[in-house]
Length: 391
Image (cartoon, rainbow, N blue to C red; front, side):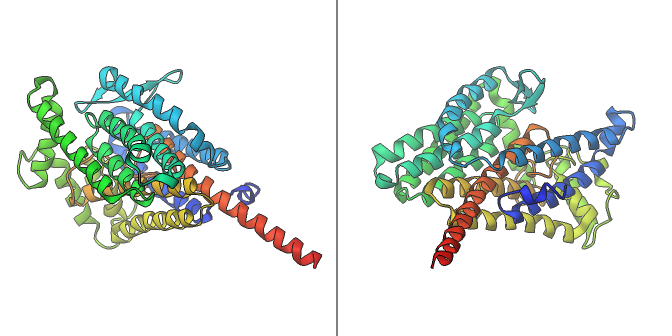
């Protein structure tokens, strides 16, 4: 371990944030899966812990192996991945495994593991938008040559994600708008894009209303909005109520690790509502620590974007950072009942499989840009030292 640390490149603060969030993840997942273990694994409480640990460890290996890659590679692979992600999303909508009345999942060939193609599509679209914005900077104000080539993939990818995962589509759509705003696209074009998105969503909901086969998903969205407003069946609102109880029980210092009671009642204490379990066991101090980690990640991502050597690196770093932060705060806002239930996992904390790996790739992208900044700084310092020695 001591020999590996000097070889780690990139922003050390982000590495620290990843480690702290992962430690919270291990503790919270181990605590919140005890009921699951007794129900499905005959009391083998270590089963889910070891599974989650192996996924996290592979994520760290992935980050370490890939963080030294030059970030410019992502510009080269952005378009092929977007072209691959579109048909994959369409295939998943038609043939994917249905969970909670939504076809989000498909199987990775060869390893028999389920994953959500929307995770791949998110990263691919952000890379593509960053690439196009960087390439089109000279004529970024022009609609036909700059805005339309970016607009079409955004609408297609978000539109394909929408039927199965409204919250992911919304987060990705807003991320792309923010990224285009930073990239210099005309504000009226962005307003038009936002309007197109709203109209498309309204048309899709209208279609669902008149399509009996699709009414289940519409019913889910309607129930979540009604329950957020205090209406609807109390059974449907059960998880939100239990989340509130967990938060109230936590107090300032919490009930200490492993002492959560609401983990026995919450349907998904290890995923969608893991933040509530953290608050119950670690109190307000734990909640502030988690929020602070994501705020530090946001600050460092912005700092890296400002110092990035090129437009693509800056846009890529800020785009990925914003996407992760939006997802994190969507999850935490659901747990404290600030927004309706979305189903978004807490990045690097919630139990998961491929979702953790895709989050690791997102972190790798940010670290790759920061590594390039460090290398340019070191090269500049070497040149300065050489010039001084020559003098």
